[in-house]
Image (tube, rainbow, N blue to C red; front, side, top):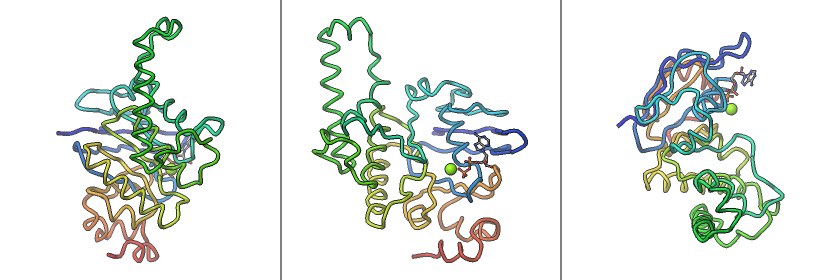
Length: 260
Ligand SMILES: Nc1ncnc2c1ncn2[C@@H]1O[C@H](COP(=O)(O)OP(=O)(O)O)[C@@H](O)[C@H]1O
Ligand SMILES: [Mg+2]
């Protein structure tokens, strides 16, 4: 089954074609990576898929339904969740509260029931907290819920962001450079986490510069260059594609993607 499809998708900023005539289709399940040099259009593509930007042209289909131009909250309810290239952690909140923010979307709060603190509302709160604790456990931050977010080291904050994205219970999870700034051990932990999440049926779209990570865990890779699709296929196919080596990876890159 096709989960996500882009049809002739384009987005311009003034004269810049950030994404241009891009079509691709991703099946449900697995880890799909999007790679390409800085400015290739990866973040813009994420912003289009998650409704933060509207395309200049083209369509986006999620589970066969045209979702082009829907607001981010609508898309989140449909099952599309993301993390950001730059940390979007609320530093004045606890770790647990940061996750509850992500859950908010799904509580479908009735303001009257919240005001009166009706049992249904309280039950939802209790469930949300229990779910948040489970998610913290899942990303390796178990027991840290009451800590202030600003007391966590960088690598843990990256995982907190993933936990928050998971709180909306996504079918499709988009991760914009989750290992950026992480050391080798933290990167390995992210790789394990993503593999586990894919294992429990969440389809992952990963933007990441760490080629060892990308090549190690991706089922499918899409290569962008100047907003266009340059190549796609398995890690092996992409690694051997002369256009990729030439246009993106270059000589230095060739070493970077050499088989481990
Ligand atoms: N909000 C914006 N306003 C103007 N130009 C933008 C904006 N967002 C991205 N761009 C431009 O679009 C191109 C693609 O950027 P981006 O999607 O951030 O690439 P990547 O994430 O692959 O590094 C770049 O030339 C960038 O300068
Ligand atoms: Mg980017």
